Length: 74
Image 1 (spheres, one colour):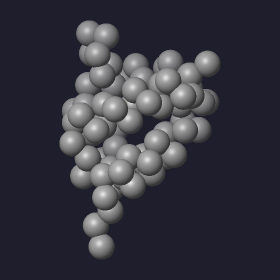
Image 2 (cartoon, rainbow, N blue to C red; image 1 turned 135 degrees about the vertical axis):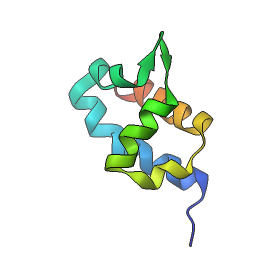
Image 3 (tube, rainbow, N blue to C red; image 1 turned 30 degrees about the vertical axis):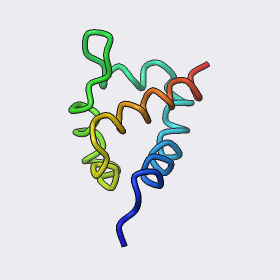
Image 4 (cartoon, rainbow, N blue to C red; image 1 turned 180 degrees about the horizontal axis):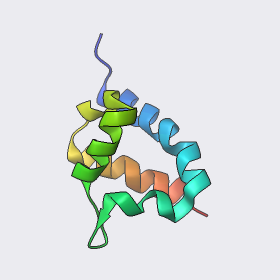
């Protein structure tokens, strides 16, 4: 059974939670190009550690990264 995009986004946000809390702004540095989030760089990282999230499109990945930044960066 395929997971819905909403469930995948929620699971990805939870997956990112402690990584972002621990690393703060430095977590986002590899996924940022010219002060914008780079979904391709994020996809490459996800492929190695949580490929399930690759089913989300770029807009959804950017939304989750932005949400993680808002929620978890002090």
